[in-house]
Length: 326
Image (cartoon, rainbow, N blue to C red; front, side, top):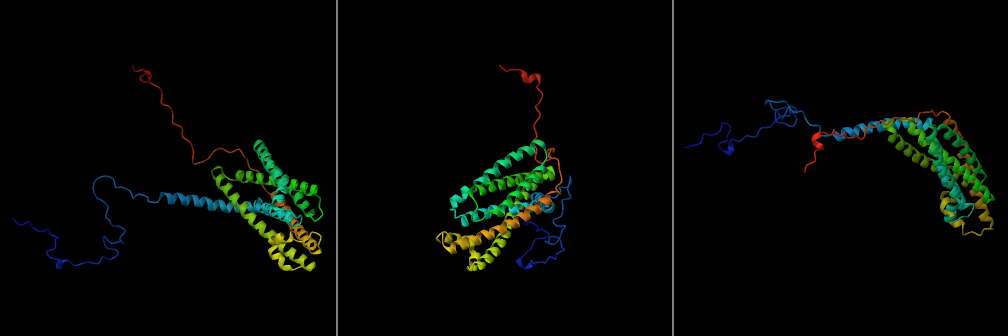
């Protein structure tokens, strides 16, 4: 008994004729209504969102972009960027001064910086505790700039003949000022931001501080190189030394300490450092003026975060649960 053929079956291979589907025809990739939805009974299933992580990431990036704009305004008005310029520039050129003018080795340079770091770290801890205790931070910002301007101005006195006790006391004053400023600005930035955006504000503050470090070293390098080159020409020394002043210190240590050439190089270094510290004092004064516009925000805020801990409620005990099975 022969089986009847299906209505759409092909008798031979020659009967197959390929068809070309237009972009709008059913089954084509360009048809948005293909494949057809099931018309069967029951509720229709909504299409599944295949990229929830992308949507969440887009939300986070929107927060970061908006916060970056706000942080940039704070960096200009509340002096987050300006204060780190003299700070990190000083931390770069003070060791440079000790190695070149004072003829210290790298190890002795690290030891000589202990008065600065020894005053900076305890000051930051004490100021942080005081701001947490009293809930105010502007007093620390203003006091920090008063001390920092004094210390930066005293750095201008660093020359070839300064006594050891003198530059030790100067380094202590500089460390006190930096300790006050670092901790007070860290508190102020987080107080200005909303509770749920504190982490972003702290991260942006760290980025801005690092960015200011790069700019501070670059600005100081430009001033130092130009001034050093000018003084080298005044003492009839090769001006090309200014293009590689850091590496020339190693060569300078091999010169006789009483030679006229060595003394001329040392004096040229000292005069260039003096101009650098004068520029840093001016920047510190500008930052102090800008800090007067910092507004006071409360540091007592309620926790407002998307990540919270939920504690499960204990089920009430029943008489059956208290029965001891023997």
